[in-house]
Picture 1 (spheres, rainbow, N blue to C red):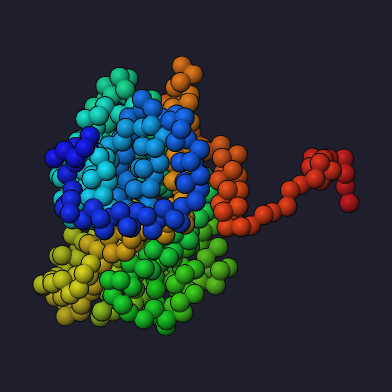
Picture 2 (spheres, rainbow, N blue to C red; picture 1 turned 90 degrees about the vertical axis):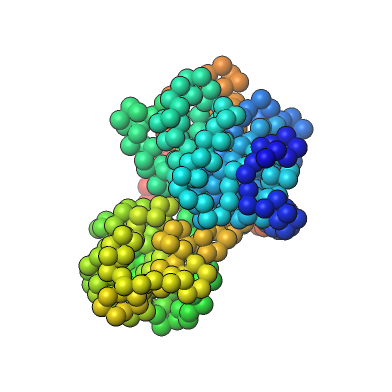
Length: 426
Ligand code: ADE
């Protein structure tokens, strides 16, 4: 379907008014992005650039998309997870003339169809969350890398990890900026964003009391740490499972119990996977779980909880409430799986709050701009994964502080000199 300029496929265009209000709500909590929008709306530095994006269609993403459009870009968008699209937001974007292909509850075939549709603009910039768009270009349109694409950005830990592996193998066909690795992204979005939104998803899908429950968090990376901290704050007994010795040690010093999943499986009331690795909860774990155990995932892909294994142990299943399926096992116990093992924070709730996405998306915007600026100078970055410049982090954090009405001290010239003075001792 066409609306104004853009082609789109969304669930229901009539939801656009509702979506506009959600976007307005997010906008008022995203001052860093608003400042960038104000700065670039006259000069339009992205004019002539075509951005294909594959990232959760949320109210916060809509603010990012509108910022790109105001800076002159042509945008074509799909969601990066079959269950994370907010249909009202997708409708609002479509009604504003954005090319968007996204609806809640699509199947995997439709997911890749949507990505292919976004590629019809022949993007020269790509934006990913989980690298599915980049992988699709590499697999189905390898010529795009030479013909059109000057670079891309990647939002998430899992995506960056895979892209680094691809670059190490010499298989990456264009440069990618690792937005995830910006301090103003991972240290806020991954920790506080995931911490809050994951528990938000668990509560919306279950409404259980968290205080006093044994909550098993698999993975004590930034996301797992955020979930564990917030669960502890709500009175849960948090148990961590890990494979990395230093991460496990940190968890113990934070006061969490650390054990193997084989042991945690027997005592957990709620399981939350946050590892980025497959097969964290498998047959032998389901087999020993307590009656009524609740299982969910907040990692990017839906492979952390092995639902094929669970199906083999299951006699029957039914939807007990939204985003919550009851599996009745052959051994008589019931296990509840939230959001089909997909990202519980986006499928059952609204993803991270606008305040943290403000910084993540400011990094996205500035990174896309960086790729365009390099291109305008007639240059091209190498085909590898690039970090965010350190000054970009400080700039974003400074604006964020200012918009919160907080000013901080600055080093005096004497203090700077003192820091560098290697002849000064005790
Ligand atoms: N990832 C996690 N939370 C998100 C949000 N609110 N919008 C887009 N991507 C997200």
